[in-house]
Structure formats: structure tokens, C-alpha cells
Image (tube, rainbow, N blue to C red):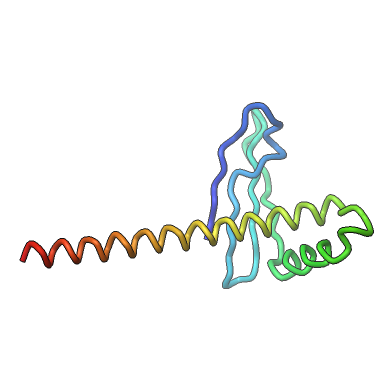
Amino acid sequence: MAQKYELDEKKSADNQIRKTVFNLEAGEVTVNHHFKEGQVFKKPKIYNRQELISQGKSGDMNEKETEESKEQQEFKEINLMEQRCHAQIKAHEKNAGVERDSRKDKEKMIQ
């Protein structure tokens, strides 16, 4: 699954995520950032999905004792993005199912 994000002109482009691809089969997450003005290529960051999940959870367990490192915050944000993406897909599938059932009912009424 993948999710794309718009560029917020008010923030620095190179720190904003442009596209995130959650490859569940390969067990990796690819994060592409927006380009700065004049930039033509930026190498995407590729993360091991299991590491992201485990790092996000370890950050939760020690949350009260220490502040999260920048890396833990990044991992946690990517985990949240994956959860939101999955939730949106589920919601769209549910809506599609409701619409399909509604169309079937209307077709039966016509016949």
C-alpha cells in the first residue's frame, strides 16, 4: 500500500514526506521526501518494517523515563502513517461493499 502527501509551502520541502510505500510482502517501508527547489533527485529511505514496529514499541515502553530519540520519533510517525493508511483502505473497502450491495438491491427492484 502507498500514500502520497502534498507539499506544505510553509515548511522546508526536504523534511516533508512526499510518498510512503508499505511493502508488506517484502517487509520494507520506502519513504520519499519532497525535493528542494532546483533538486532533481533525492534517494529514498528504506526501512525494515519489523525494525520500525519493534522500535516504535520499545519507545512506548520507556516513554515516561526518557525522551524519545529523533529516530524513535521518526519510526513512531511511520508506524502511525501505516496504521492510518490501513484504516483508510478498510474504510474505502467497507464503503465499496455498501455501495455494491445497494446497487444489487436496486437492480433486483428494477427486474
